[in-house]
Length: 81
Image (tube, rainbow, N blue to C red; front, side, top):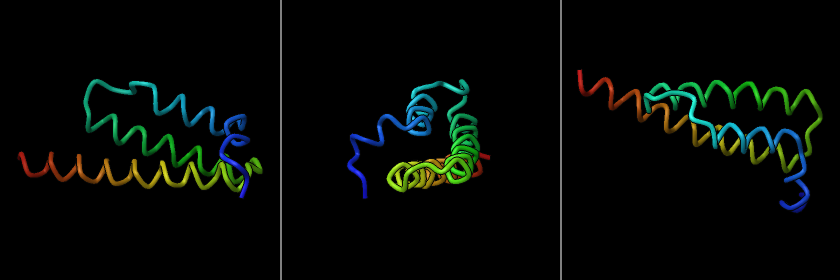
């Protein structure tokens, strides 16, 4: 696997960092859902765009964490009803 330093120059990793830094919504639940959708699209684009394996692994891990956060947000929202 490539070093993590070389993947920082990858445009897909740069987009990942920008997505993680951006506030997509004022609502935490919507933020989690929007981030999940954005990362799903980014993962597909990285695969189709020939991103390095190291970059794809980082995106996949971020996507997994976003999925966990979205599930927890949805569960908390359902429990409040």
